[in-house]
Length: 379
Image (cartoon, rainbow, N blue to C red; front, side, top):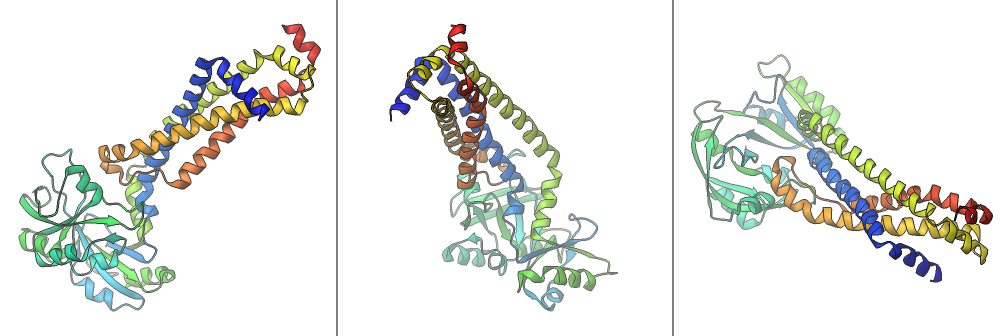
């Protein structure tokens, strides 16, 4: 307790410098929280991918369709539990800046295969009942204020024209990293209204009976349609999601590189400030040793100051990052789900303590080795 009072008194003696040093840690770990959330946003789709799902796309390109007749042939394969399908719509809501995914799906099977999308029984019934029905994710509904019963107009780009949808429900995620920024509507409505591409789908999703059987089933699917006009490429859902991440890989690298440089620069400046603080107190440290403080106790005092500064700054920075992430997620919907997980928060706080220890270790060792005569000579 006496040592803590001494540490606290030393920190309060030069309040401006202590505040600025804590502020440096705050900014650094606020940035750490944002970068961790953005990284998770880039890779969230891959991280949240189902282990028991395979995605079947056209071997040439994802933008090329597959025949609807493939569904029944896929269902006949050993190891396949269920099959659903989806087609990218690519409409515009009000203006091009309001981007969000719009996907036409099989009304009967999509939410069974994707059980991590939670939809109320009433919303599911409304979705099945109304041909123009759609469901929107919770984050998308919060972003635009969509409510059940709203009319949602879209301007088609791939299939031109004005399209109207009725919001039948709002789905939520069963996990924090589940993407709820999309809109799903019925593929039979798309099939009925579109002028071209009839009897085709964008891709199939195959649910496996055994998640460990993915390699065999993937080879069986691609072998089944080899040498056909529509050859397939079957991937795990994680690989399928990662293919979208690769399209933005350079952006992710740029953000992470710039952020990391700023983060490390702030920490180096902080370490230098703490070293200067110790050097200014060599005379006082010599007096402490003269009155009976051991070398090891002086070491602990300096490290305690560093840990207290780093812990306060790191904790406050991470809390602020966690607080602003929801607003950032709404402002940048193309990044998907952004959040600071408890694991990220814990790792960030531990990292703050580690960095604080590293920043204070050299000054603390120097103070521990300080000879009383040499220190007093400098005064």
